[in-house]
Length: 226
Ligand code: HEM
Ligand code: HEM
Image 1 (cartoon, helix red, strand yellow):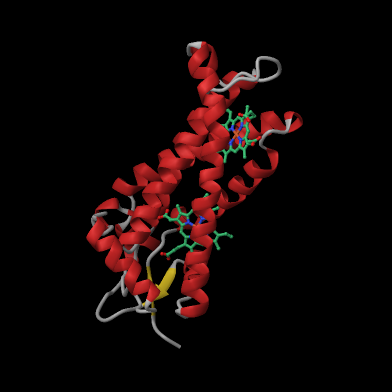
Image 2: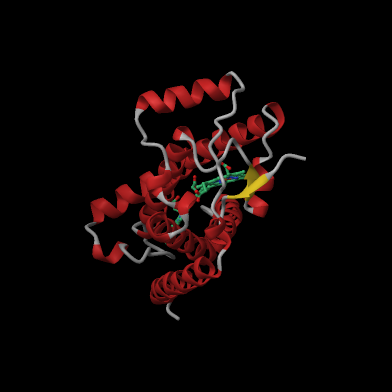
């Protein structure tokens, strides 16, 4: 059994599995008038997760921090891609160059999908919370773009799943177990980040999750008329 080191803190892991559930719920509920309130609520919570993840990229533990991602320059991303194709391990505990870019793409797409949903209206049953504040042309544009963005997100998720399957089956790197336990295989002298499992990180994440949850709850409450 190879040695493992601490990498992903509880908030990265919990957040990841919650957005997986939320994302699949959005795909099923989107466009169904009967579930529009639930769809809008879960979509707003997903936007709340994006805000949390951006904040966590600055105040979270080492491997959650954007400063620990390799710079997203095309040369490094291509190199990272070639290594994966030739089945050479990246030998980095956190995100590789290509993995870091994937995180930025996910954050941008989820936020834009949620924002366009919040700006759209069907003129009958549903008005997104931003729709009454925007000119009619923008509301109509948001309604057109929202399904396009959610389809784009679906494509990115499919690529993500292919990449994870490749790592797990072909490269024998148990990344899914890593996202469940927080521990990944050790490389060279890399000690990992024991701070990721510390009480300070747990409490800091808890406080910021509560703050962002109350904020999203407030927004949802306004437009669902609670
Ligand atoms: C990341 C979050 C979200 C995802 C992945 C998502 C996904 C989807 C999908 C797949 C559809 C069906 C599109 C179709 O019929 O082809 C849809 C429709 C819809 N969504 Fe979302 N949605 C999200 C967030 C939101 C939010 C936050 C709101 C409102 C607050 C919202 C409001 C709507 C409305 C009104 C429709 C029906 C009208 C339309 O097709 O534009 N969505 N969404
Ligand atoms: C069952 C489906 C999924 C599985 C098995 C899965 C698995 C994983 C694994 C193993 C990682 C860590 C990769 C590493 O160690 O470098 C990861 C990261 C990530 N995944 Fe997924 N994933 C799934 C679905 C999704 C979906 C649906 C989304 C978004 C809508 C998503 C967004 C992300 C993001 C943003 C990260 C980076 C984590 C962070 O830094 O916060 N995943 N995923």
